Structure formats: structure tokens, C-alpha cells
Image 1 (cartoon, rainbow, N blue to C red):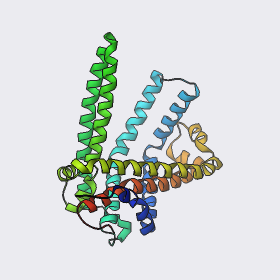
Image 2 (cartoon, rainbow, N blue to C red; image 1 turned 90 degrees about the vertical axis):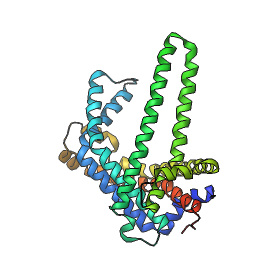
Image 3 (cartoon, rainbow, N blue to C red; image 1 turned 180 degrees about the vertical axis):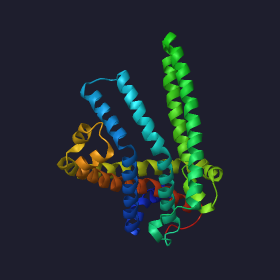
Image 4 (cartoon, helix red, strand yellow; image 1 turned 30 degrees about the horizontal axis):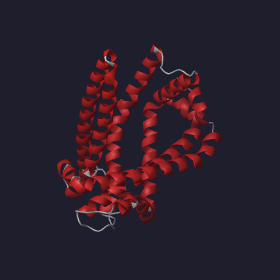
Length: 297
């Protein structure tokens, strides 16, 4: 099994050229998702933004107890709504991207669906997320224990650094090993965590790692370019200052007072997010096809 890492890394750009309407539909889907999320947790998001801005303005490194309480309540509400909706929406988009690479002829609804394929991808993603979370928490617990010992024995701080680096390396290794789970699950029609993990062993790991780095760098460059283009429009409608000034207001008041600003922010974030996700996700479906011996579309 071999594949061209550099060739696959640019699959997102090829996909954008091959199916621009689908990418625009994904951006529209992101706009709907962001809009729905704002309707559900908009005031809590404003609270988080206001508290963080106030801390930075006062050059403080830590929030006060009152601010901690406000942040905790806001984050809890955001996660309560955002986590389940985000996981489901991510499964729909990632499956659509895999479908566009694996079955480019199946263009209906911009490759977007909500069916068995998406639910299988959601299940596989949850399994991977759980594994990553358990590993991270176990590693963090070890780091905490070593750091506690370093208080009495300063020489152990070197061990803290080494264990921290080891945890970062382990998380990166697992990320690469699980990177083909979505296309594998979609193509095989089953939750394919084990088979995808097996595919990324030995000689495949480092090319996949390099491909992921290239795709990530390109996605970040696209994000920076998009931010530079969008900045003048954001300033024209008031920027975050107007949003922060509305702290404590309900969703109807926010929409009434900041409609243009929120609309611009919604469109910009939706387009940028869709572009970045395509650039980052599509290469792994292309790599899966090459590893399976199937030609790219």
C-alpha cells in the first residue's frame, strides 16, 4: 500500500475546483449551523467575549472568582448545546467531503445527507474522541503527579517537560493513526476504527503525518487570507466592541441592534470554515483511495 502524500495534500483545492457549488452549499450549511448556535447560546458567547476582553484590557493573567463563575456558567451552556450539535454537524460535513472524493458522481444536495453513513461516521468519531480523551486525561494525570513531586524536588521539572512532550507526541501519533477513520467508515459501510488504525501503520505513518502538516499549513494560510479580506467589512459594521457593549442582552435585542454585524460575521466565518475544512479533510479521503488502490476522481 502506497500513496503520494504531496498529491493527496492538494485534494481540497482540486475538490473546490471540481465541485464549487458543493463547497458553497457547505458554507451555507455552516452559516445555518452558526446561526442556530447563536440563537441558542448567543448571550453566553457575548459574556465570554466580554470577560476575556476585560481581563486582557487590565493586563491580568487570571480572572477573578466572580469572572470564573460567569465564565463557567457561560461555557457550560455553550458546551451543553454546542457539543451534540457540533458532533452531528461535523459528521454530516466530513461524510459529505468523503462522499465527494470517493463518489464524485453522487452530487445530490451538494453531497450532504443525514442517514446511515452519517450516523456511522458519528459513532466512529465518538469512539475516536473517547479514546483520545482517555489517553489525554491519563497523560495529564501523570504530568500532574510529577509536577506535584517537582515542588519538593526541582530536578523533577525536567521530567515534567519530558512527560509533557511525550504526551504531545502520543496525541499526534494517535491523530495520524485514526486519520482515515471517516473515509474508511464511509466506504466500508461500518464503523471501521480498527481497520483504519491498521492501515496507518509502518511506512504509511510518516507520509500521512507530512500530508497532514501540509494540509494544516495551507488551511491556516487560507484562514489568514480570509481574515485579512474580511477585516475591513468587520470594522465597517462595528467590530467586537459593539457586541461586547450588548453584554446581558437577550437574543432578540442582539439581533435588533447588531443585525448587520452578525450577518457579516456569520457569512465570513461560514465561508472561511468551509474552505479550511475542505482543505484539511479531503486529503485523507484521497489518501484512503490511493492506499486501497482506487484512482482519485
